[in-house]
Image (cartoon, rainbow over all chains, first blue to last red):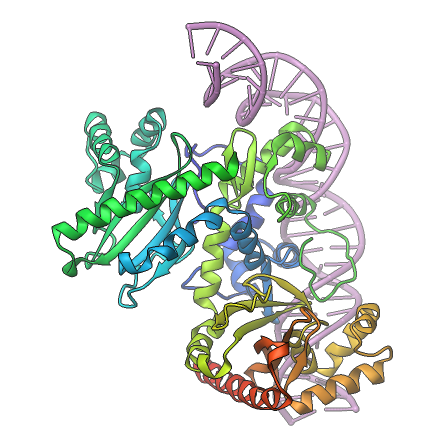
Length: 262
Length: 262
DNA sequence: GCCATAGTCTCATATTATGAGAGTTATTGA
DNA sequence: TCAATAACTCTCATAATATGAGACTATGGC
């Protein structure tokens, strides 16, 4: 369940004990947030002593916390590190103010998304319509090939990068309706890039998202800004005007981001 | 900078490679959120190959993300794991609704805090007074001996646990004004426990916090609810009425928590 | 399309992680 | 308060693997 990185051909594992230790963290999912020592022993097929050593290391580092004897859950270090990411993230310094300023005009939910290797994450949300449950809350990962947020990012990735993606993920790309051949894929994305906005309803069909790209530097895509509305309540004209607004807002954020790093 | 756990006598390191790998994460602080490969090599005093192996393992697991060639920052897996903690945390399922319902009566900031070994973390915040900057945002760790949030938790810890804490942290305890001998420490906390609320201004002197305990099960302290107001704007009478309210709210949260696990 | 820099690979060796089982410490319930 | 019963840790010989040096390869910026 670990996040992929871009060089996604499996290579020989270099530091395998560390990988096993880090892998323990992957056991703790939404469905199974609590693990007992015995179940971990069973799952890892390792000896009791070894598993205790792993748990000791992870608990000492704060990645796990012991709820009771023999029961573990994810630990406080993760919450602390998430805070550090939030504090250090230049995107989170400039975007929320821009998003808050136009809350009334959007009259829906605004999402700020960030691009990470093969994934896109929502990292901030500004809501004004309480009926919209985006399922895009901070930390939820999305495929790079689905959702407006992802597609506008994809559309702005450099061409060699896209070619590699196409080679390694042709199935996913076809399933997402982005084309079954490289020229079609490339041209589909080119059109989205030209338009400057991606519009989609593919994650939640009751909603419609309009996403514009955010750049850390010219040509360097770093994330996207998305406006989300109830699909049944928007007209073609609304889509046009919101698209214009999301493009302008994303440009404003990009500008401030580039200023900040200058 | 790793979180301590309770058995805080340093024991021999069991899985030392893993500890070194996990230790790389500790390099990424608020002050230095970006590290280059070269600086990590220098810092770890390890060979280039080894550091690349560590970085590869951490990046593949998503704990680090590569910003550019040779430049790393904390990665998306942390944001994802924080979300999992939020989703799985029973306290976050029941408390926010209770807190929202009394927002107007509190007319300040409400903090939900959780107890983790030697630390207390704010895990949720409900603001109604924008002037109050609590510095208690989600993920900020606080000593178990400072702040009203921590003290009410401390006051409700089992006695053997407290005795161990006193033995290992006498200095910190004295510095926090909680007593220089075990009987004084014990009785100070007993008084707070009897009162049911801790009142303090020791983190930010312009603010005053009133904290009540939250129990996961009878006698099992798991966190605290804190009301924060501007100190200059509250009378003795306000403190009394807010203290009553925070005690009642925390009891309500505890009740729902115990129901949920029943 | 070149060149500098970043990153990877190989392999012999030193280091360390591992498991079995004995030993120790906590917790629970009477 | 005290057994009884887990839960956890330690020891040590051995198997496994992490490490560094340096040659090699890939990448991306111009």
